[in-house]
Length: 135
Length: 386
Image 1: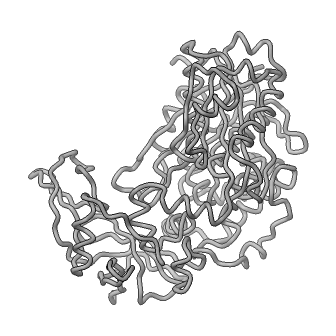
Image 2: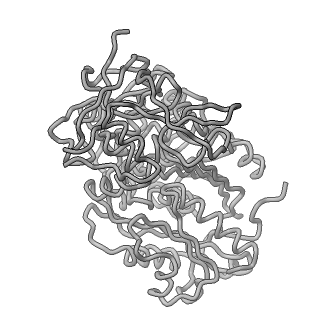
Image 3: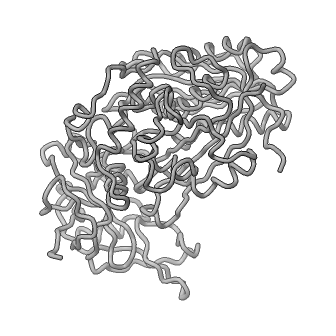
């Protein structure tokens, strides 16, 4: 079994959204800020406002950097190795991490556009993964 | 500007025996390294009235319960929670405590007992963002995290695998002169480039080997320093920063560039006046970022610096003279103290076969990996007191 996220009152909307195949991120409600935020926070790390709302991301972005995992950190990933893992900058701004499921291994994919998909991480929980879009 | 802790001296350094097996408990490792450091200083356990400990595997124990176990009655305690940045931070906090008169003899120590599996286990639950938004997503542990930074460095500066290879090979040469380093067989470029893949572009010799060990220093007030053995070492300046490059972590995964001027202004020296650097080398790319952030090399030019100057103990600018974590092994949080141990040992001219000619050097730390990089960066400039 793969490592599972701990779901709490702060992160619950994100994980419920994932099960509905929606990529939810936070957005600062401060009129002068409006920045998008991920991972979930208790307050805005840009303007310090405690007023954040959940919004749906368009689910597209580009690869900041990528790696191919040959030796996984957890037994739950052994069967998938090698697989591509990436830091992705969403169109709204924040960074999110995930597998890129249709990507070639052992090569740089920096700046490649990607779109979100969802796959099961356990029998009850879906998790965002990404697919490469043609440039 | 007044020197931060003019009336404090480092008077002892010691290591526990490094090993691949987790063959000792954390209290045993702390006591072993502490005893060597105190003996090196010519001081005894009953004189210790300050204690700074960093160890991932110490809980459920802590600095206070270690004091109890050892029969100490400290007036200053510190427990490092910032991973590999904590050794240097513990040192600077202990120096302030001595400067303020809170204590006279502080033992600064880090210890851990890891293997690959327990290291991965610890990292999976390191903090909330890793546990919930990196580990379930398949990040590949610290290897995957720093593979991302290595790839970006290569893209940004046109660096190639060989650039990191020459750095690792030089460190291995240094380790061959260090009997407490775990990897002492010669590393060739061919072996480096053909090693098994871990997390592309990282191969085996880019990744530290988790192991068991401990490192310790003894700090005392100036009035006690006269009664100790060997050459004392002064702290010219120390700095720490946390969450540097906030909200933009892929611009630079460390924070040394943010405090470089503060660090060198306070020490009243320039980077060119340093005789060595002991940097936190969990991955070669992080050593590059430290040397560049501290102004020792220029951004993107570290590989060129390595080839031009030489960083072995015979080189013009030695780096990680004990072999670093990449060759000595990473004993968890003690990875943040091994460079300090080496710096003090070199400055006290007690490094034996690997001794370099030196008077002033820098040690840097890095740790608490969170959402994509280590949150905490630290550094200290030390000078032999003669």
